[in-house]
Length: 257
Image (cartoon, rainbow, N blue to C red; front, side):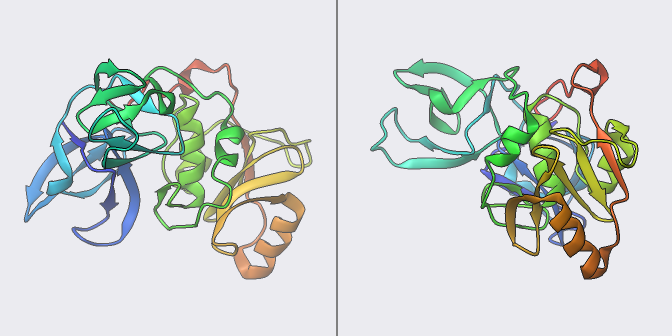
């Protein structure tokens, strides 16, 4: 078992090819084969692809997760010291000690206020998604520097400690239960089009990363439906609701194992 040691690395469908997703600091990767500087294998959440060998190192079990949207690791427990590492929401760290206001990790000294024990949850996915408002759209992106629609949904549900596959078609097939057409919507309901997904902020407003705004936005669902339909992507294909009390949905930190 390997893990990511850099800030983030692309998971590619072919060596050096198109990015399907990103792995963050501390995310696990089960390497099945290595050829010409690329590892082929499976991520902690079951996604398969290629990762550059130079971005992986032997796995160390994580103790903490990054809860800030973005943070820095520093070369010393001092905010004026040079930063050594960029960190993103959902990254995992192995903390060895504490020095004042900082946690000491292999990546560097990280502000304690930006991390939490690995079992810490942010239980409201919509609240997590709203933290990404204005972040740029990036196909296959999974951080505040760039994220796509299914990456946003996955980040929000992983922060809540829930299983969530990476792609919108997988999310549609695997997450929650269908909501009957015409039923009132609730916060955190997932709305799906063919190739697109967003989650509800409230019964009328959708949070989603989209290529029209090239950003994460919250907007009236009715307006989003009209625009997406006019662009030729059709109508909503379904709405899914995840029961917050369903234990089988819990992720159990598989990304970090």
